[in-house]
Length: 193
Image (tube, rainbow, N blue to C red):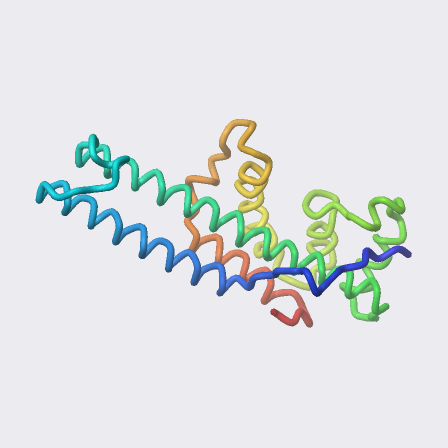
């Protein structure tokens, strides 16, 4: 049963809390810059060349756009981080031959996969999340709420090449953090990084 080798020395995993702290710090800096630019424009002071010909309304639009992009990238990072944690937990359970309900279900499903899929199993539909849900070891609503975040993650992670999913504008980083955190905390025996 192939289990992919993971080079932990080069991994740069982030916790949900680290991602949230990064988001808050960058947002704070962005808001401070916005305030400084608007003050400079009102006072007639020198501003960076990109803002020199902008009106206050255009500056607001610019910073709103920057904040929206920051929020989207934060949501992508939160969902990707939790996906990595769930996937690594899956491989750990399969590789260690644990006997609990979830580990047994993962192992049985893993055995039926092709060699290629064993190295890189599907995550969402007909994948790891489906097995997690079918075992009933956690509240299925928690899995469902997390899955709603995946549409935006896929849209962002694959270059926004199709119509924007509604969920991307429905959620903010705090909503996504809560859903990712709820999923990770609900998985029995999962040790959070």
